[in-house]
Length: 187
Image (cartoon, rainbow, N blue to C red):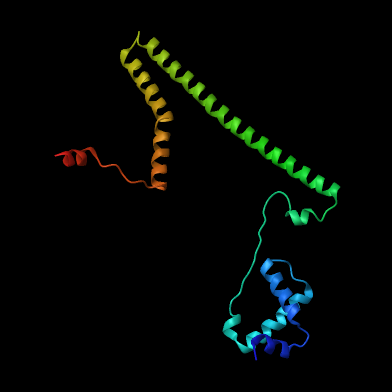
């Protein structure tokens, strides 16, 4: 007696045609009806009793959807007017997000540009003050000029060096051999 006949004996309500339709539905990935689910459950229970190792495998299909719009299947459940308003709402939200990002970027660029302009103005003023004071005291002019230039270096160069060092620490790259090591290799 074959396994199919064993299963049919234990569950007389399942015909070979029904089993074939069930197998075809499973292979094609179609949604099973409630009746097919119960038939499959009964068959698996019988198979689990007779051959537990055969039923130990489990297949799970999970579908995850993320986005500003609901899943297309859910969206299609609504009437045309509701669907149009949901899509319009998503379009407006995306437009708003883009405009906010654009304004934020424009503001950051303006802030940097104003900082550079005011920094340039302060540097020129300091050098101008040093040049004017140099008529009366060369030492005072040198101190003012030196402090002005060191201040500009401190404001513009040092932060970039710290950023570069932090970037190197976060993403280690192969280090270049030093000049001393290169000279030893050439010999």
